[in-house]
Every structure is written in C-alpha cells, then in structure tokens.
Length: 482
Length: 146
Image (cartoon, rainbow over all chains, first blue to last red):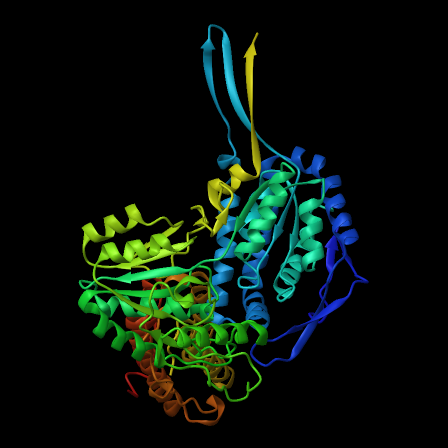
C-alpha cells in the first residue's frame, strides 16, 4: 500500500475519506510525503459502530484465542521491523536508533498483553458465609478509543490497544494527523491477521474526530496522550459522560545532579535525556539542577558533550539528533528561547542557526543550553518540547525539591548521586509518576504502569501492564449458594 | 565516526555482508575439494552471523541506554576484499585471513563501547568466531599463508 495517502480502516476494510486533507511532511526535508484526511464525525461514527458491532463476538472469543492474534502481530512486526522504524523516522524525524527503540517498546507491550489470560484472572473465596462462595470476575466493557500524539507515532496506541483487545474489548485508534503513516503501516500488518471485522479500527483526523470519539455513546473509555489543556478537556468531557478516561499530558522534567554524582556516568545519561528525540519526549529532561559545587564541572562537561552531538538527517545512522516535528513547532521553541533571554537567562550553547547539508529546509535545532535560569522564569516553568535545557544552580537538595514541588507538572524527575540517603529522600518527596535515580530517561517498561501525576495526568489507572488490564475491564462480584 | 548503537551494529552487518559475498564468490570459483567446501561453509556461516547481528540491532536496542559513545572510526577497519575469482589461491586466503583479523578486532573494540551489555556480549562472541576461523583457514592452506 502506498504511503502517500493515509486511509481509514473501518470494519476490516480500507476506506477512502472525502474529508479535507492535510499535507504530511518529512521534518528533515520539509518535503510532502503524503496526505492525511481530517475525518468527519460521520466517519468516526462508522468506526465506533463497527467496533460496537464486533464487540459481542469478540468478548465471547476465549482469551487464549484472542492472544494468538497478538502473537502473530508480534511476528509480523519483527519481520517488518526496519520498515516500521524507517516509517517513524520519515514522518517524525527521530533517529533510527530511537525509532528502533520505539518499535521495541511497541512489541514489548504486545508481549505483555499476550499474558492476559493470567493478568485478567479474577479471584475467589469459598465459604464467605457457611455454604456460600464469593468470586470476582473481570469482564470487558465495550469499545475504547485512543487519541495519540505525534512524538511516538507507532508506540503510544500500543500502550493501550493490545490490552484492550486481549481483554475482549474492541478499539478505535486516531493517530496524530502529523504522523499518520506509522499506524497505517501497522494496520496493513493487522489486516493480514484476519481479525473479525471491526475489532480494531483506524480513523485519521484532527479536532473534529477527537470530539466525536469522546462524545460517541458507544465508546466507553478513552486513552489520550496530548498537551495538558487538551488532556484536561478530554478527561472532563469523557468523565462527565460516565466514560473511563486516562489522559497523559504535558511535562516539565527536572534532573538534579548532586555534588557527589559520578559525572563520567551522569553526563551521557543527561545528554540522552535532554537531547534524545530532539527533546520531544514527555520524559525528556528540561531543567538541569546543579546542587552546590557540581555546577561548574557539570556545566563544562554537559556543554562539551552537547556541542559534540551530530545533528543531521536521522536516516543517517551516525546522526545523534534529528529535527523537531514541524516548522511551527520549531518557531515555538525559538520563542521560548527568546523569552528566556529576555528574562535574563544566558545562552551558553546556541543551536538556533544549525544547518544540515542536503536538508536545508528541515526543522533542525542544534543543542541549545540556557544558563542562569531561575525558577520564576517562563522557561523554567513551561513545557518547551525541544532540545533546550535550562541550567539552574541551587544550594542544596532541599532547595531543588522545593522547586520541583512548585512546578505544576509531575511526569518525571531524576537525581544523579552516589548517596543512598539523597536518592531515598528524592524518591520519597518528589511527586512525579516516574522517578529516575542515576537514570535520565525514566521510560517504564511495558510490565510497569506508565503515567504522571499533577498536571501531567488526568485519571487514575495508567497505561501498560496490570493498570491497562484494570482500565479495560470491570469487576463483577458473584456470590453463590447451592 | 560510528557513535551510535545502530551505527556500530550496522557497520558490523556490512562487514559481514562483504565477507560473505567474498567467500561465496571464492567458493564458486574454487575447484572441487576441501578448500571449496571450507569457503562455502564460511560464506554460509557469515550470512548467518549477519542475520544474528540484525537481530541484536532489533532486540537489544533500549531507549534508556541510547547514550553517546566515544565511537569508532570505520577507516580503521577497512577490509580489502578484491574480486575473489580474480586472485590466486594463496592471495585469496591471505586476504581472508586479514579480513577475519580486522573484523575480529572491530568486534572487540565495538563490544567495549556498547552501552547495552547483551549486545556487547554478542559482539564479543562474534569476535571469537572470526578469530577462530584463522586456524581453519591456515589448516586449509597447509599452514600457509599467514
């Protein structure tokens, strides 16, 4: 199937859309690589209906049979691994290694969901009263939907969908309109599985499709990964209708480096955290907090390592950082840098003028570091989502913890230290969903829950693992006397 | 410079592919006998090794460990494999021995830089495989060349 026109997949069939189309661009070159339809609410309605029609048969399909489709999908993903990774690179702009890592995590979730016959089990107790037994069973609920972001175009829908399918629900995925082709490619593989029509559906689109998914009466729950204002909106709207919702939102991640940190080990981890995926990762480091005397050596080594990064076309495997997603986003990141400078921050590494030979129209930004950043500056508070760390100096760990605590986001935070006491205090006090101790990218594995706290998450059950199984099932208690 | 996990493994795959093509062509041109069998076997084994490395690149990549590495210069590991059909028997085995030694050295150096220990182990084992071939090649030439 051609990659030049994204198509919806509804009821087991590829469907052309008559809706308005958007160009999809390669962020490395600005070339148009295809188009995506902004599907109407009627097309969402068709997808939701197809999923609803498929539900009864699918929920009656034994879990051990349902997971066979996941095993086969996993095999197909392995067979098509490089092609899938290159599709991610083409439309999102991350490096090949990062795209391969994304595919690995995608597959890892499918592998964990394949354990659903165990994960979904209920529990029971005989003789809760004389001659009376009680049990709790888990049952699927109906149609769920995923509203996905641009930054992990293959993986994010598969934080949720394998668990939804394995537990007997049916599903609708709406990818970001900026990156439709990774899911398109995955659905081409899904099409080979001969799943019952309607069990899983793909609808491309923008805001209209999102609103229609959240409003549709057949859809009983929504998983979304987006910005904080949109996540809050989706959560409020879904929960007002009695739907389940888990909405992962924005982030502002602080990384604290203590004076006793081993900088030789820390700096490579910091570089990956701040500049990996060009900073467009909800787990990316954003503010580097140097405690006490570590400030000068940390600044020197971190800046030198950042300067040494190879920025370029991410299809070139020697490249360590690719472009950001769009020209518009690049301008937004530049505006954050300008705001920081106006507020008194100092530029100690300036990547704004980076140029990549052969990719002169790409949306590249080199590593850019702002120093003398204070907690009240906008760049210390707002999500930037680009390769622009803010360097901040504090007197002690307590001051660092207070700054983190005041920030409204709670997705991730890390500490680099060789002190068990400092590490313990950090993990005990910081209110974030993901804590790193001498780890800069705190990406929860598929068998652990993934999600933030505070303004970074709206809901209770997170994605992945047992949390996902809980989200996609409801518990029913049965009390029996014979 | 090869400074990423993927670049290190892909360079290894490319070295294996070149070597496999060399052995396959050499086996095709060689007269029936022990040398032809050996060259054919080495070609097959090298292809299999290349496949194993592609699997390492797929399965061992870990987002949390994609840290910058000092890197290797590919110019230090160039293998000169002329058209295997156009050189003498002795020259062919000499080239093969040199290539095997270079590739083994590449694997040892790359293994030291691997941020993922499992991938490092796979590269070390590949180094052992190539180092072990020297004896087989020397045996096939009666102790010469090399």
